[in-house]
Length: 327
Ligand code: BTN
Image: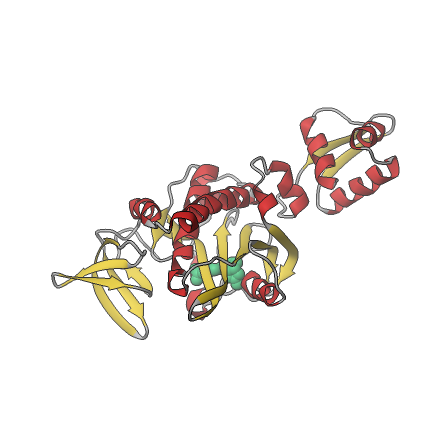
């Protein structure tokens, strides 16, 4: 109901709508309207109320609360998700795993405004700023082989790149396996984790942190991280970014699950790769190796050339020497 009231107010930003009018249109009492207005104020909406005129919406916050998100969910994306929103948690990945253990369904989207123990890949900490970062995890229960799970990271990275491009006009690059860069600096990190038996996946948690409206980063990250705000000098709605991401993710994910054909993802991923043609160093399982990145195979593994021979890299941490990449 709160979503419907918000939608009504959004339809007429320049005029007041009376409580009576809202109550009649939505078939609720005036007391109920008043209660919902109060709840909207608590969500951060700025409402002006004038005796004998009614209510006018002055400002909608960049909140990730489902009531706010659903007002611009034009394609109905949220309807297929179980949405779990919280103001603060330790890590959305950890919360998603706890929910999974209690039987949370496919697809549960865990969204928060702040994390106290956010984690990155290789047990690194992740810095996300409350209110300006977009931090969330997808809990998925796909019917696929455990060995195919890394494909989810590549699908997520591509969907993030599409969402950033749509919402900001920037042209992100992808650093295999799952970093998204703008101007050689990291704008998004993805941490995919899985619980599986040999023959099947119990669940996958794909955690995503997008730097949306940060105006600056701590000193130690300043050269390696960027945000949409720093690149475009204007704010971007985190809620709209999340919805565009989810729409793009489901388009890619559903197509892959239906066809088991990963080639379309790889072909788009390769076009946006920050690595092809570059000399890369890969650190995996305590060993370092170097080679020229020549592309990706049909499973999404990195292919490098080393002393004239092709080598397939299944997992690892990649770094690039110079060449405009700082991560
Ligand atoms: C990386 O680049 O190393 C991955 C960073 C992943 C950060 C996100 S923020 C939401 C989710 N919750 C976490 O604790 N981590 C991921």
